[in-house]
Image 1: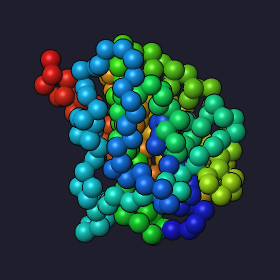
Image 2: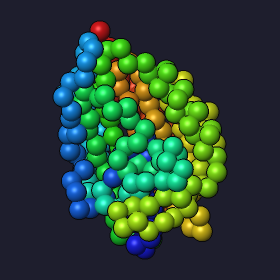
Image 3: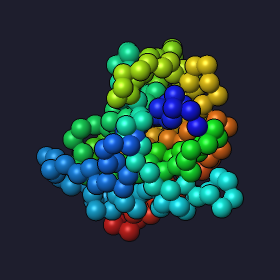
Image 4: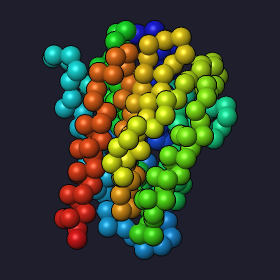
Length: 232
């Protein structure tokens, strides 16, 4: 896989919707913050690791599972216009509100080839007064407002152009869209799931849409519902 394409894996963020590749630890790291004000929600920070795909549990190529890999320094950390960062890149989790009570992230890849497959995920919990529907409305409005080529860059400040596609119809609890890298076959698909006091983002990147992003997002939503039923 070329160096340029490796850096382009963050046509994500969504997300880091709004998750960051290699020199700083991100994979499986508990990105926790002091508990925000307001009543605790039904899903606790300690449960967030259940909302990440286990390492090596997903394979696109036979015998080559995706494995947890620190991709922090490869991800796009800025965008112009800045408001579109979360729409076109996962680095630094630009879509996530900052008053989270806990956060977990994991990046996985089967690494190194031109047809590399990548799975980038983050989940965060929020105080009990968090409005999942209002948050998803804001994400959808941001995707709609960023239907234009967006300049992005990573730690080395080298610039690329990302082209977002319109929202794809999905569950009321999921905002789903994709992006492409100008002049390349590289495509990233984003799903941002929000329910109760939790946000979970799934970004899948490859040259051929090799990972079924919608299926991963549907499983994530089901898991959130299971956690809610267990605490209800």
